Structure formats: C-alpha cells, structure tokens
Picture 1 (spheres, rainbow, N blue to C red):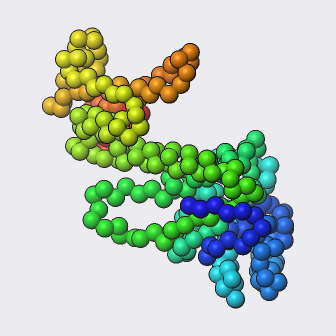
Picture 2 (spheres, rainbow, N blue to C red; picture 1 turned 120 degrees about the vertical axis):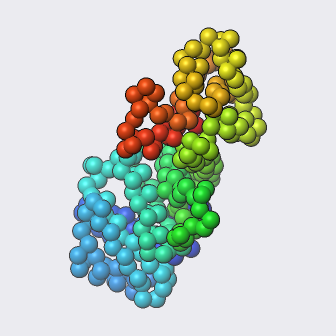
Picture 3 (spheres, rainbow, N blue to C red; picture 1 turned 90 degrees about the vertical axis):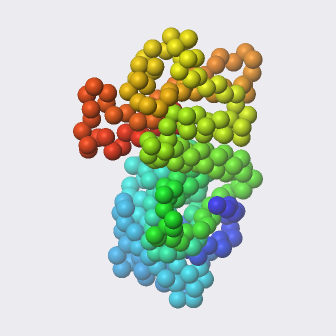
Length: 288
C-alpha cells in the first residue's frame, strides 16, 4: 500500500477511472496524465458503450503501454454515493484486479469522496477495506490453490503528509480485524477456551494491555454461575478473560466492551440443526 501526490502519473500498471453517472471521462484527474494518443483511444472506447452505470466495469489496454491498462468503473448516480458504497467499491477493485491478473493499481481518492468525509477518514477507510478484501483463511492449507496477483495499491491524494497517520491507523485496524477473523474461523477443536486465553495473552504482550484470566475456581468465587453452568456441557475447562488498557486521562470515564467468547455453541438442551451447527465455532467472534 503506497501513496502519491496529485499531478504526477502513478507508477501502477493500471489506472482506475471510477465515474459517476453522466460524468465525462475528460474530467477525471487521471485523464490529463495520459498521452494525447491514449486520451483519444480512451474517449473512443467510452463512446462505444460505457455508460457509468452502477456496477459497470470495463477493461482498456493502451496501445503504447504507458500505462499498460485502465479500469473503467461505473459508480451510478452521485446522490446515491455513501460510505457503504465506497467500502464496497474499494473491495470490488481488489477482486477485479486479481481477476485480470493485475499486479498494481492506482486510485484517485479525492474523486471518490462520500458525504461528510475528510480525506484522512477516507484514506483510513480505504486501507482497512483493501486489506480486509485481501483476507483469506488458509491456516489448514499447505499452499494456496490460487495465488493473488494484486501486490500493490497506490492511493493518489492531494496531501501525502496529511494522510500518513491515517495510513498507519488503517493498517493497524485491518491487521487486528483480520486477526479476529482468524480466531473466529478456527474450528472449535483448535480454539478451546484455554487457547483463546493464550491468544489474548500474546496480544496483551504486544499492546501493553493488562490481562487477567479466571479459571473455574475463580469464576465460582465471583459467583459467575451462568458461565460455569454452560461450561459443564463440555470437557474443556472455562476461562473468563479480562483485558484492560489504561491509555486515557485519569478523569476519563471507563469504556467497557463485553464480547461473547463461547468457543462453540451446540445449543445446550435444544441442540441446533446441522445447518446452524457448522458455524457455531464463530460464536466467540464478539470476544475475539
């Protein structure tokens, strides 16, 4: 993931021309970076049938190879554009690039602004969305069956320095969201309460959080009957994990997040059907 300033041609293999309905290709910031010959070629291509419709995608190969290609992506009416649509669009770009075996793409971020969005917020959201789109749970695969071709995304912004912190934050958020997905996707046999507690302890070391893990005796002492009762349905011993981060001011009110960490929910006395049972290893997603 890299960033560059407006006004210079990105080094990526493919430029993304994302256009709202009725928006002219000539008005896109990347258009002026093309050679006159490529500009004419692109205009001719668009006139033959690209309508900027929502979800419309076309692929252009430039004759001189500078840049090699362009993606034309239709965004539909601008008044329907939102943060949710923006996130979907950024993830779609990853899928398109991998499908066309493109190694690097360039995206002009300011032209995709959604209502009430600062550029830094957009940059952070983009980084999170792109890295989450690249996620794949391959813990039990010896080798990925299909290698992903996209290696680099270049975000073109008006102020590189202004989004540096947003880039950093976005990478951290995406890394730990994907870490949670790894925990949730791990089958219950390999993600017992003790193993979940071990993962929490490893995370605490990296982040400076304080951690306490209650075993059955500690829970009984605290009169946590509900959790102790549920755990009696399993041969696995229960664990109750408390993580504390004290990074605020002493006068700040504490924020408490409670996440369900049942590593496998069979349904108790009313067993779930097979259709619902297979995904119950994800019942600890809140805790993760």
